[in-house]
Image 1 (cartoon, rainbow, N blue to C red):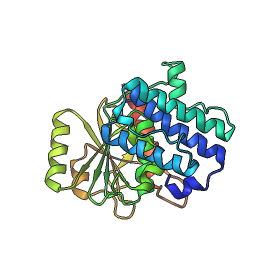
Image 2 (tube, rainbow, N blue to C red; image 1 turned 30 degrees about the vertical axis):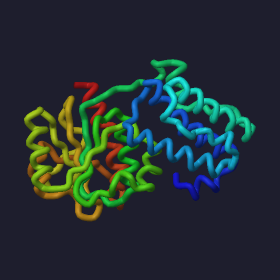
Image 3 (tube, one colour; image 1 turned 45 degrees about the vertical axis):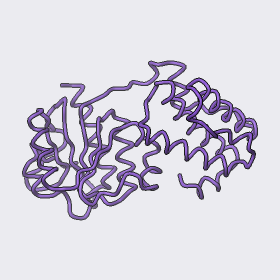
Length: 268
């Protein structure tokens, strides 16, 4: 969410949004889910901006010298801010994912898989953000951006991913040499490469090979997947449709194959 849209929220929603950012920072500080230094700094700067919009009170904006105090003082500082924000908005603390996790470490069925998804020339930041969110939710290890795929630091990607980009590895591959070296290495590591595309050789998604390690390739909505990638793939799969429209949005299609991938892994 950018600063302008944040400013349009009601007071209670602003407070909840601020608390969500604070909980993300606290989750990292307490070791529940670690953020990289870059991502932690990004979240901290976002918090500062949100607080400035929420209130011009200096006592509320007590983030000065944040990195100069010890860990316990940082945690206390963030907690103090969240309580002050909630008090000013006259709302109770929202039950975030991190609050649930602290109450009950087993409340999440967190499964880590070796699966990865490669986005081949996906231009839409909303599609990329949605795919990142889905991949993280299903326990995928990594999202790889290739070619003209939008940069992950774009605001629209972050908005669509709903902060899932903080919890999953994202890497970029730009050159053809790099991408073919990447595929070669994955094949040596016994990854199954599955392309999601409707072609003369593609078969129904239901017949996808079981695999504990898989690379899913999702391509450009207009031009599809690079033909060279299709020739490298171990299998090409399509989603059986029965309507007049014979295609789906890339993020929606990924969600379907993502679910099937996880089912095949569990059944394997």
